[in-house]
Amino acid sequence: MLFIAISLCFLLACFIAWMILFGSGRDVVTGWVRYAAGKTKYRIQAWQRSRKQALGQAGSSLEGWWLRTWLGVRQHYWLCLAAVVLIALPPLGAILFSGKSMLQGFEDTGRVTNVQIAELLKGEQLVPPPPLPPDFFTTQEVQQVRPMLVGASRNWQLLNPDYVQRLLLVFKIMKEKYNYDMTILEGYRSPERQNMLAALGTNVTNAAAFQSYHQYGLAADCAFMRDGKLVISEKDPWAMEGYRRYGEVAESVGLTWGGRWKMMDFGHTELHLPGVLKKP
Image 1: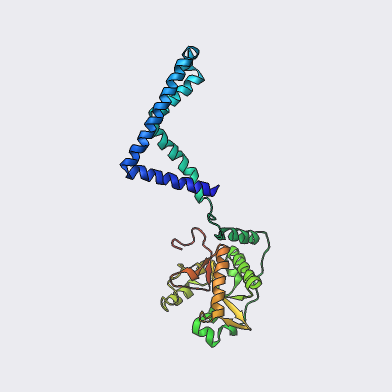
Image 2 (image 1 turned 180 degrees about the horizontal axis):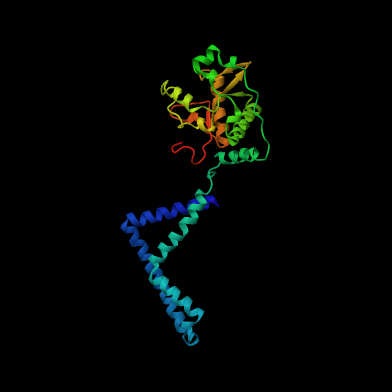
């Protein structure tokens, strides 16, 4: 059915373009319409003669109304054709663009999103994992990638409850489906800390105080645990593959992933709520 609708729409577009661009095409169609109209007129006149006695007061009857309608259509056939096209195009457009899966093999990611959010809203309240000891954030590798991380807040209680449940669901899926253990590096960030990080340069953050979702408990930076150690570096192929999957899962539950930004932040996710930031 969808193939037929697409074919009809394509043929209609070709016909309209042919009529507009080629005068010979208009002449052919006009000649055909006039020929058809002449035959129709002859048949109508013959029918009128045979029914003249029976019609009587047909002007006020249903039969007379149909006759007048047909004669009006025949007289203004171009206007009627344009009306038919205008009426037919919106339903065809609705059929063609109402869903994403117009072609076979196209992956409908919206269905995945709905399933994940439906699971999230079933009522199950996921519990945050226990915090990691501070010495996990003071290793040489961590300090090279994320300096001053030891003083960051990892208190789940300071985050928006809706965001917490979505992020914990991401952690759960990453563990069960891809065998990645995840942990939070930084959640809520005070305005003072935000300004301090912004002062370090654009390679750290472009956002000043209250320009980041961290100040509203709607963002967090996360990384992976492997063999009892924190793995943050994007140079690690295993971690980079984890970030890619992390971004896919986060987006499937309605979060925004920093890996798609111009200044990519692979471990960052945030929940956009209306009215929080003027320019998210």
